[in-house]
Length: 275
Ligand SMILES: Cc1cc2nc3c(=O)[nH]c(=O)nc-3n(C[C@H](O)[C@H](O)[C@H](O)COP(=O)(O)O)c2cc1C
Image (cartoon, rainbow, N blue to C red; front, top):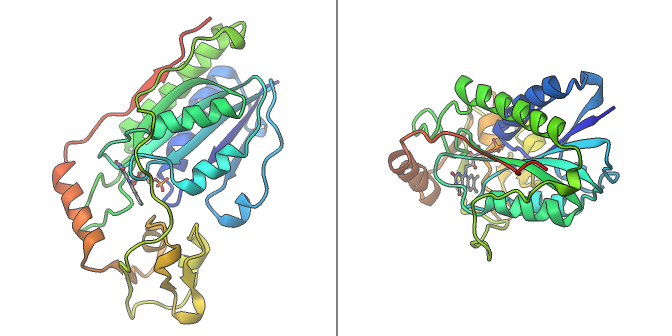
């Protein structure tokens, strides 16, 4: 009996949505029941405090994260590096905002391999850009219905590959785009780019979704720039739309992305050659 585990970081939930669609296709193909599926959403810092039990040969693991500056967000990479697996097939997914994903999928593959996983397939899907708003709609509403169908198909095709593979250890190496040494990634720290308007009702939802504990309830829910990872989860989760992007470099970047990356990109999928 196989167990399917989704392990992901997803501040604005596009990675989560894509992974769930992939899991649906995979579970159907491999006849894995809902009770054999678990999700580990490690976006919040308290989940990252402890590691996970090692994965074994009866597990199948989906690893997913967004792309930040062509790399994995450092909190996501650090958590993935703590995983341990032995002979466990891994399905790797990065989700990016319709610019490029550069070295992120390669970085995820390298980390998964170093942890003992056997990467069997990899994908780069598109998600609404973290910086998107109704005013600057970068990749707005992605993943859309077509993306999610493709995510499901990717899951079921991976299931087909796993069914046909008699000895996982003899599976060919998964090849994905990207370069090593990787491009420079991003750490914590952001320009002061979020304004809390007087629509704020102090409900505190922004603080509960922040992956880096950068929101100070004592100071009217302002974002502490030094701890912010720019994910915009707080802006998107605010029920009052009280958090808005200030004029400045991040808003300018969003405007640039909206113009320079306006042609919708299709998802890309990669499979290890079967044994
Ligand atoms: C700090 C930061 C850097 C980003 N860098 C990239 C990038 O290099 N390329 C890209 O296409 N999208 C980039 N994005 C957009 C996210 O990858 C995209 O919106 C993704 O869908 C967010 O995933 P989530 O919804 O799971 O948080 C970036 C977003 C943030 C916050």
